[in-house]
Length: 390
Ligand SMILES: Cc1ncc(COP(=O)(O)O)c(C=O)c1O
Ligand SMILES: N[C@@H](CCCC[NH3+])C(=O)O
Image 1 (tube, rainbow, N blue to C red):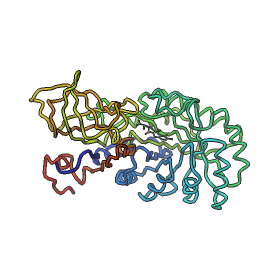
Image 2: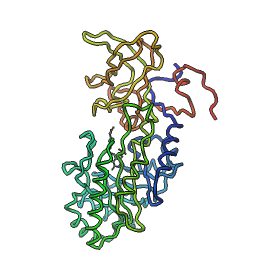
Image 3: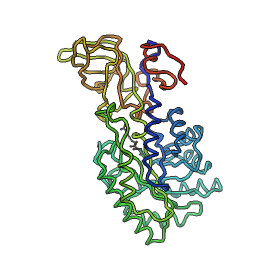
Image 4: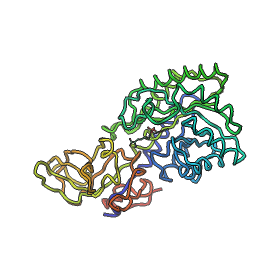
């Protein structure tokens, strides 16, 4: 083994292909895509994404700082979050970012105060909870009335009245985000309908907006990552192009995370033991929920492959589990070639909400990242000599 397992491996070529497909699918020059940094904040990933002209969607002061360090201009950065601290608002305002997505009327007063202290006028978007069902996992649904996110649509008039009293705030946009891993286009169409109605109502109140931010949420194919590595961005953007009634001069912003980075990342782990349990075989690997928490947290499915075993040896079924002292530390049931200690398991579609959600529970070391243009996966696992890659 050339490098220590477990580790993350990112296929930079796939990331670039994804970005090329995404940018080619943008149907209008007034569409602007911000990458949702929360999905993966590795500097190498952020720098690659920036090359394709995407802005940054942040949810913390540290994400703003990371975006700036990776070359994103303040004018390309937006900040959302239901609980922004004063320090985070200060980072956003002092850097003059494009928009602070305000999630409550209560927050307006605090932002106004901090903007005044900075002698700045902060650009505000109202994050509005549209009460649209994203038809995704309930733990990653964000746009229903019962969710903590956004200003209720019924409170928008009151929010407008409040912001008009604030000297250091300018209302420039509206923001929505209904959830994540959304595969049907229907929820996005419903969102457009809600946005259109709201824009009419806001216009009737004399509000003119510069931008509409419809959030992110486009899902990926976790069941067939090799066959379907790049999401259908064309179909996704077409929904908004067709259904959103954009006023002249308005820009439409998107905050895509998972669809940009999920498929380019894999978690690579070594089999420590193959154990015969009373009712099943366990393949105990050296990665756990500390490196990839999605299966434990959301029962998420990730395709896995034993990339060192030989299918000619016959097949068997294994429960692939991690070493952590939690019964939910299970990656799933898998039929794979007869597996032995030392084999390498590749856990796919782990580029989004994988490495960023790692923890040091059990005082584990952090898995580090390797990039395909610096070290191929085969070189990482000692299957081939690393040759110079241009
Ligand atoms: C406000 C906001 N924008 C964008 C995203 C990115 O979502 P996704 O990774 O599903 O594109 C999220 C995460 O769900 C979010 O909460
Ligand atoms: N962490 C979630 C996505 C959350 C999106 C952020 N609001 C996942 O792994 O699917």
